[in-house]
Length: 296
Image 1 (tube, rainbow, N blue to C red):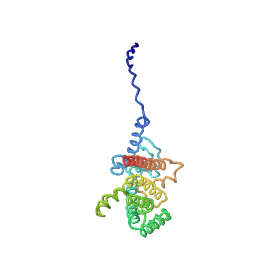
Image 2 (image 1 turned 180 degrees about the vertical axis):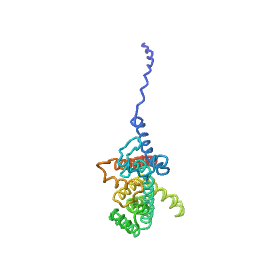
Image 3 (image 1 turned 90 degrees about the horizontal axis):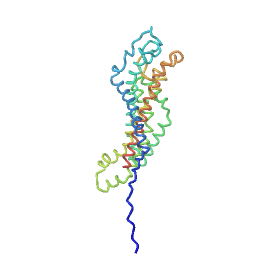
C-alpha cells in the first residue's frame, strides 16, 4: 500500500513590479503640454484685459534719442524707429488682435450656423441653395473680399472682423451642415419622434446641442486662425493703421528696418506664432477630451 507524499508548501512568489504604461509615463508630459499653451493664452488674455499690468511704458511714447535700441534690461524687445518700446507695443497690441480674432470667429460661426441649419433642415431645395452659396464663398478670395470692404468702409477693426469672419464662414458652414444631417438621422432623434416629443423640443433640446457640440472645439482653433488673418491684413497695410499698436501693423512697420533692427519684426512674429500654436494645441486637447467622453 502506497502512501501519498504530503504536499509541498507553496512558495510565495515575489510580487511583480507594477507595469508602467505608456499613458502613465507620458502623464507629466501631457500636463506640461497643456500647462504651457494655457500659460501663453492666459498671458495674452491678461495683456488684452489689463495691459498696464505688464507693459512698462506707454506704447505711443516717442523718444528719438533711443531709436533702434537693441533688446536690453530697459527695453526687453528693443525700440522701433521712433524710440517706442516694442515690448509695450506687443502687450498693448494683444487687445486689438484678440478683439479682431474673437469678433471674426463670432461672425463666422453665427453665419455658419444660419447656413448649416438652413441646409440641414430646410429640405432638398434649401440644401442645394446653401451648398451653392458655400461653394461661391469658398471660390471668392478672402483678400479680395477684404479689399472691397476696406475700400467701401475704410480701415477699422470692425471691417477686419467682418472680412475675416466672412472668409472663414464657408468652412464652418460645411461642418455644421454635415453635422446637422448626421444628427437628424440619428437613433436618439428618431426615438424622440417615436415618443411623441414636439418638433420644437426635439430641435432645441436634442438636435441643436448635439449638432453644435463640435463647434466648442472650433472656437479655439478659429480664434487662432482669425488672428493670423488679421495680422496678414495688417502686414499688407489694410488693417488698423499706425500709430495704434497691432501685431500685423508692427510687422509691416518693421519690415523696412529688418537688417538694422531685426527685433521689430521678430518679437511680434514670435508672439503671433506662440499664441496661435497654443490655441491649436488647446483645441486639439479639447477635441480629444470631447471624443473620449463621447466614446464613454
